[in-house]
Image 1 (spheres, helix red, strand yellow):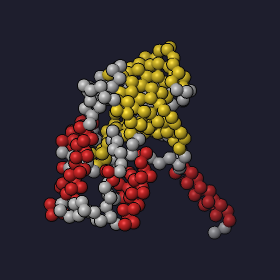
Image 2: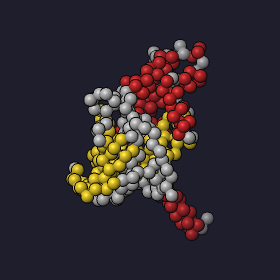
Image 3: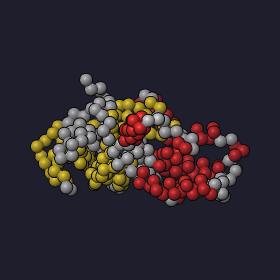
Image 4: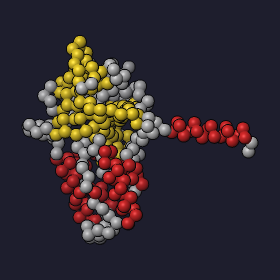
Length: 297
């Protein structure tokens, strides 16, 4: 191979490497919310909005924030060939879904895991914003007020034209600047921007998600209708371990996990309790009523 071919090949490899890398702007939103409809209790959780050139992804930050703990534990289990119950050392998320917004169409995809399967549905959400002249400084940001109705609630948003992203937490978007704060009139849900950073070599999946795929829990999403998704998710909430039970023969339930005194049956019971606690912790959905979405013309 001559020197010219070597240079050309090197250039192609370099371009391929650079195109595979992606940067993202990560915005941290503290979400304050009432998990129970008739309770004055307020829970808080950090959520993130990752914005890339092609899309944004909104999710609960609880698991991604613990990536280093999960990585260390998984590597130890692989090295020692023993089982470690991570439920005792990890903080569980408040919300398990992700919301993708495709740029520039802003078509939204709601994604969540139902048992061992990853499902999602597309939702062409559109907001009718009323922009006010009222302005307010929130933290270090100069913001302007806007209001809308969505999911059976009335929302007030404060957006900053200084942040050139027409996006925001959860499903919200469509203002001439990033949403810095948004809450409903009864303060059931309130997001406020607390910080941001630029991520080089951004990866869409967390280490935990990559580890799941390595051990057979696929991250390939199956796109279905919202009606099918809601029906499947309701059945999952009612019996979280239904699918898992069909995969584990009864004679295996009394077998010990590798390097542990815990049996497979006990592990499954622990997972069932954890999932039921998760589902029972919140009966105050963000969207009180079904939102009628119309595709943009």
